[in-house]
Image (cartoon, rainbow, N blue to C red; front, side, top):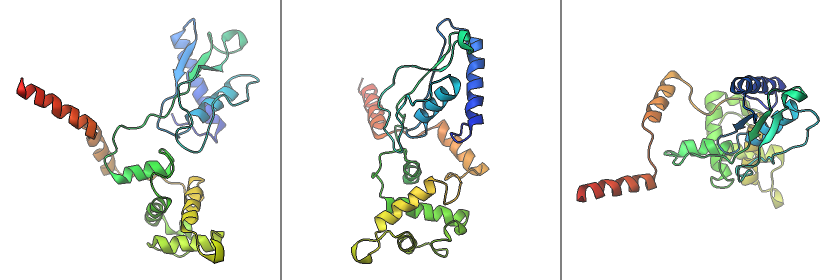
Length: 239
């Protein structure tokens, strides 16, 4: 099941699924669910949507949201998203817990980290905006160069592209000098709003999915995990 914050029907479908599960569980304390996911994927936004749609007269936010990773710092108290049976809901009600983002322990390649940074899954500034914009330009050229036609003709040169953005959108320093950093930030903002096309960054071909399944079956280990395994092996050898 996919949830879209801009589609009320997807929130209603998820609430329906929660009700069905609550009927099956039939707990005297109600059903309690936990929202888990990567940083900044909309976990808190989902909780707020479930609460405002699934309960009566509860429209205020219960979970703080933001456009960067790390807004939620700890698991909070449970929040009622579906009323009890006495109030038109199900059983003793349905409750949901929000949680901080869970990040993978080790990212093997730089491209994956760039993708995560583009969707704001890591702290802002860890990867320069110009590098992220350069990767986006590469992806847009693969997908459809017309996506950025309002700025310039198709190009592989990130400096040429950012210069065009600076001139068109007024991202200039004193004396009319193009501000490449602000231009890159503008590109990222436009893409995140869907104004530079709506497409996924991952390769979804059959071959790519097969490679992903193969890697998932034997995931790489982090440096710390590798050291731990080496120490254990060394201990067994010396025993």
